[in-house]
Image 1 (cartoon, rainbow, N blue to C red):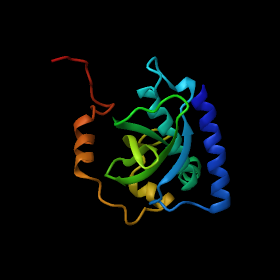
Image 2: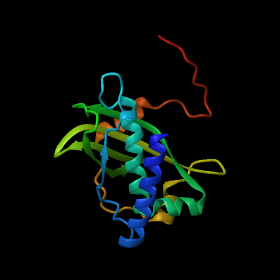
Image 3: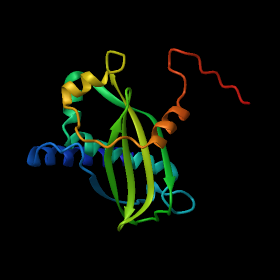
Length: 186
């Protein structure tokens, strides 16, 4: 429940900043200041590994709202879903510790957009996640990139996605929902 309240607060603040400052450039790295709360920790008294990804959602909401993408997607009847994510941990975040969450769009391929999240204390990276997201229609189906970019503008000058990210996306993919995906252990 605590992430729901944090999400609503982030959305409120992001909408207010969008009205005041206008839409973000797609190359912008957004930053949120967060604190590890008692509801975020596990029995070892540090930020639970699963909670990182829930908190990283806050960074996506902030970036997508402030860039104007949420408004465009709402108007078109689209929504984003996470198709894959990977996270690497370097150091633990402890109870009550403050940290910055940085989020940026790192590119796209023919079917998805990619974002990066970093949890920082000072200038030190404590954790980093790569997210692969797809844009879907509420009426069903995937939104092609040409339609997405026509509605929201194509981000120019994005760097190429690092080859390892594309290899990770291909290597971690499951079959499409139109094909069987039986659980067979080898």
